[in-house]
Length: 96
Image 1: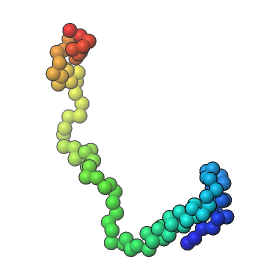
Image 2: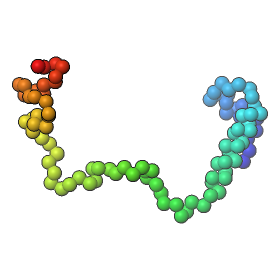
Image 3: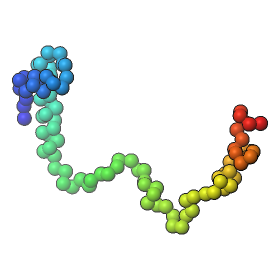
Image 4: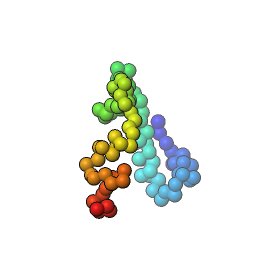
């Protein structure tokens, strides 16, 4: 697969205002197309489809059965290490 200067001019006309260094652009695009051709020739039938490359798991699918997912205001306030004043969490720099 190869690309001509006329094809390059047609592509770049509306997509970008590239400087007229056609020989370099032609060489770069031909190198990219050659690499794509090489990649397309590789046999990947034995490769297992990858959904994610990280080891992160979707925590929603591991949620324990019968777990409580909501809390009332009193339970939430009890979680704070700060002092509670008038049903609000006191912040040291705001409330004393």
